Each structure stands twice: as structure tokens, then as C-alpha cells.
Image (cartoon, rainbow, N blue to C red):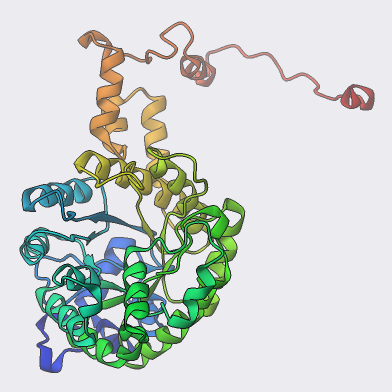
Amino acid sequence: MTSENSSSCHRSDCRTQMHYARHGEITDAMRTVAERDHVDAEKIREEVAVGRLVIPANIHHTSLVPMGIGLAVNAKINANIGNSAVTSNIDDELEKLHTAVHHGADACMDLSTGGDINAIREAILKASPVPIGTVPIYQAVAELDDIADLTPQNLLDQIDYQAKQGVDYMTLHCGVLIGHLAKTRGRITGIVSRGGGLMAKWCMDRREENPLYTHYDEVLEICRQHDVTISLGDGLRPGCLHDASDEAQFAELDTLGELTLKAWEQDVQVMVEGPGHVPFNQIADNVERQQRVCHGAPFYVLGPLVTDIAPGYDHITSAIGATMAGYAGASFLCYVTPKEHLGLPNAEDVKQGVIAYKIAAHAADIARERPGARDRDDELSRARFNFDWNRQFELSLDPETARSMHDETLPHDVFKSAEFCSMCGPKFCPMQTSMQLRDPETYLPEPTSTNVTADATSK
């Protein structure tokens, strides 16, 4: 196999990661993904070639360290950042980006809807080593007085502009069709996707079909020229448990399956977005259905949230669902912050969301028995048993918080390296007892019979 660095392509002759993979070439990006996830590079190439793995890596994103999304590699997480029309600025968004990356986000989406959106995105792309995604319709609509004034060319121009800037993946709500809209009438919360809602309103106001669907071939040409990964948005995703797994959700999913195949015909990489609110017992079925309908394309899920009654704690309700989704076969987990449903997240909210989802992704990798996934857990456990506090903190997902919590409850320096914590203290510490049990000099009585009579068992 020869190595080809796709970042050397120009618009006129660009070839996507899927193109190279299908022609038997292992790119530098594929090698980076293989090294990061401890997978053979040829395996990465094979998975990209058939569409089961994507490497969002726009040829213009010069600060990028490529990463892969798919079942052949570890589960990845996305952190949403971006301003609103009423708050935030470039410095705030860069702080959110740095917070997300510092705590382990594998990718970020800039969802800005106000201010100088181009300048914000430019700054984020320049600073980001992780892939950056966007939802182009947000800016296209923000620049108009009325959504009915939006033309198909406006959307295509916006997609092209952001692709030239270096955006690695774009959420495009191509599957929100006029024929699907009436299917949402029996829902409690209707359409909750911001992009899906905009697309639905445009279709109703203009009495026309979704332009991202009718002009899909032109969208594919833009994405192919810059190697932008399409994230087929679930504009009709359920926004509450009542609405989960309904006719509208699955009608759109069927359309996304068709669009996945069309993208692959043009060597365009695709992942498919999934539902936001799903009862726990329906999550595995949702993942299995997406994998079947969308031909194994990576599944990108928001949560799912497994209950609707915890505003302020939805990073927890959704991380529960994300763990199950990851175990069932979702490859990319979009975080939810404590501010979900309540307001624009700040840097601390971003941190809380990222940590919750790093836990979810890691737990899913362990459950899927990914090679080496539990090594860090075992090493931390050994450090914990040996009261090696510094090593335990180093191995933690959030070392700063772990250290501060420990030191807060054992304030005196003499206790900060003590062989006990403030929960049990030295007198009640079971690990101290376990250490004594391991000492060969410690007397232990011979094991006695543990036979239990049938009568005793029945009682």
C-alpha cells in the first residue's frame, strides 16, 4: 500500500478518504487513526472503503489531528459549542473549545447563530486540533429577514463557503420531506430539532420540497471537492419519550438510508444522526434499525435521554442512554450539558457534559470488550489499593476535581498521602485489612465446609 496525504489535494483534483480507501491506498490520516485506536491500518482502510468508518478531515483544516468514527475504533464524543443571537463572543467560544478538548472531546460542533459567525468559525478552526462540524442552515437563515426568502442557492453557497473554510463535517437535514411533516401531528413536542424545524417551516412557507433533498447531487459535489463528511441530520427526532420510535422518526430514517447510498456513489463520507429522547428499553432496537436501514454507516446519537423529568441534570439522563447506545453499536455520542432545554452552556457546563460523555463512551468500549479498554481502569484500581493518590489522580478523567475533593476532606498536608481517605479513616479501612490478608505471615484459619441443607436454603 502507498501512503497518500489527502491534505495536499486542491479543489480541482481532491480525492476523499473514501476514494483513496476504495483504491487500496492508506492515507496519512488513516495511519493516524490506526495508531490512535491501536487498530491495523489496513483494517481502517477497509472500513472507510465500505462506509462503516469515517474520518472527518477537510483538506483545508490545517490544525487537525485526524480521528475516526466507526465500530472498528473506540467510541468518540462530540461537544457542541457556539453562541446565540443574544450572548457570547469569540473569546467565550474559544474558551469552550479549549475546555472541551482539554477534557477529552474528540470533535466539536460550532452551532453559532448570531454575531460575526464567519469570524467565530474561522477562529475555532484555526485553534482546533479536533474535527469541527456545523449546521449550515443556521447561518443561511440568520443572514435573512424571513426564512421564506431562503433559496436553494443560498444554502449551496453557505455549504460551499464553510467547506472552503475547513469545516470537517456538516449536519444537513436532507431527509425532512413534506410528506413526513403530517406524521408529527400526534406528538407531544412536535419537531424539536432546530435545523429540522427551519427546514419544515421553509417547506410549508414555500410549498416546495426540501432543497437539500432536491439539490442533493450538488451538495455531494461540494462535499467531495473538500472531503467534507456529511452528517445526515435527524430533523424529526423525538423530543420526549412519548414521541420516540414513531412513524415520523422512522420515515425520515428510511430516507436517510437512501441518501447514504447516493453519497457513497460519489465517494462522500457519511454518518447518520439519531434520536434525542428514547426510553431505555428502546435504545438497542433504535441502533439496530439504523445500522440495518443505513447500511452500517456510523451512528451519531444525541444522548439519548432516558427520562424527561430532570432539567438541570440532563447530562446524566443522557449519558445513561449514550452508554447503552454505544454498547448497542452507536459510534459517535453527542454530549448533552446540564443546560440542555434551559439555556446556552458556558465553559463549566461544557466541562460537565464532556466528562459525563467520556464516562459513557469509555463504559461502552469496556462493555464491547475493545482491546485494552479496561487497562486504565485496572491501573487506577491498583493505584487506589496501594494508596498511590498521585497516580490515581493522573489516571482520572478529571484529575483536578479528583485531587481537590480528596484534599478538601483531608486538609492537613500530613494526611494528603495517608493510607486512608476521609470516608473510612484508618480504623475502618477495608483495604488495610486486605493488605494484611495478602501477607503470607498472616494467620488464616483453614476453610470450613459451606454446605447448606436444602431446608436452610428454602428458608
